[in-house]
Amino acid sequence: MHITIIYTICQCVIDKIAIALYSTISIKVRLQFFITGGFNMELFWFKGKNTFPNGIHPHEHKDTGEKEVRRIPFAPEVILPLSANIGKASIPCVKKGDSVYRGQKIAEADGYMSVPIHASVTGTVKDIALAPSPDGGMARAIILATSLTSVQTVDYSALRAIDEMSKAELIKAIQETGMVGLGGAGFPTHVKANLPEGHKVKTILVNGCECEPFLTTDQRVMLESLPELLLGIKIVMKCTGAEKAIIGLEDNKRDVYDAIKNILPKDGPISATLMPTKYPQGCEKMLVTALLNIEIPAGQIPSSIGVGIFNVTTLAQLGKLVPSKNGLIERVITVSGPGVARPGNYVVPLGTPLKFILEHCGWSGTAEYVVLGGPMMGKTVSSLDAPITKTASGILAFDKTLADLKKNEREYPCITCGACVSVCPMRLNPSTLGLLAKKERYEEMRDNYNLDLCIKCGSCTFICPSNIPILSLIQTAQEINKTKK
Image (cartoon, rainbow, N blue to C red; front, side, top):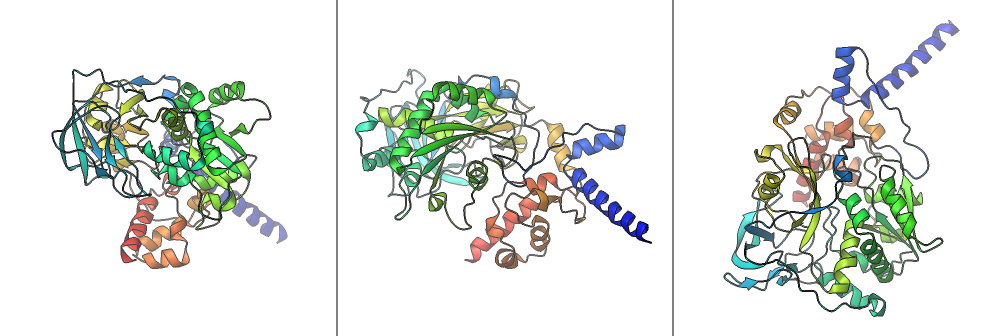
């Protein structure tokens, strides 16, 4: 009798372990298992030093990490949306028919929560009108016709000494660059560097994780613009009064870690730390836990616990633009995926249409197979006429086979395996949230199941063995709740 009970308990434990392991395997590997009768799987533990609970480990596809940054040609026309980031839209200070030069301010900031816009090409203001937007709609934008005879250079102003500038002067200078978070959030950088009253920052965390598959923009910027990055770190340290800064890197970027360690003085205020590669380590809450072993309380911002967080590409641009009094007119993006013949990392003038970039990289197709950003948190493009904006770090072009395979994945009922719960970095119950969303019980999701804490990383959808689009259901619930407020 006792032996039977013990056997039953052991069998239940084994079954739970088997289900947990199976749920971490991608659909492709599961198919391989059933077809060939076997598979190779990397087993790993998510607990340990310099990491955070839960998370996933998707295929990295960092094939462009070794490709140096190259400059893309100027498009015949660029589209600069007046509202392409968090905050108020900018106010045009040019009119149709005006001639503009590269780097000229063409739109003023509309108050504190706004940034100016600078011309990314020398040319003529073709129009100020509605134009295709990366979010799928139409947005008011300044449309510039590029001068094909111009050398497209930028006349740099006299350099200014950062050490001699006050905090207020630095904050104003950052706003004048038009800088917003280049990691994807688009929050005005000068606002983040200017702490709310009563907040003090002791530590700056420099986000160099770049945990999204395919994207290698941050990696190349760190390798090729390290002096500018370090200067950018010093600028935000002076603005916030931080005593030290930690550059957080995943261990698939050891080349960057070695380069930084070789240039940083020992026992200096700036250091670098390697972390196990895991998604979504680049999210603020995960990064704080991994590097400092503390948590940002729900509803609070990092500075409430004495931490400031900035993306590496954002800081590298600050280190370049603030001393020279220039504005943000271009950025580095990764163009990758099986659909492009020449994947790589490219410097692209802001406002360049996606179609122009993709054609330059050897791809032709429809918007249906293009993702702006990474595969986990990026969005499918609705129009290839939409432009690259400050917040876009990559373009992924997939071939027809992969796209159709994704479409034809059948959705099955939830089997309550708990896989989504075990990987959720915010420790939510995605399965329950998904079921409630299907029943349109949106307010209950918010009030009883912490819907608003979801960071929309997509780990739940990635791991779900039933192919349930949990993230899409959660996003729909969040948007509907917003409209009810």
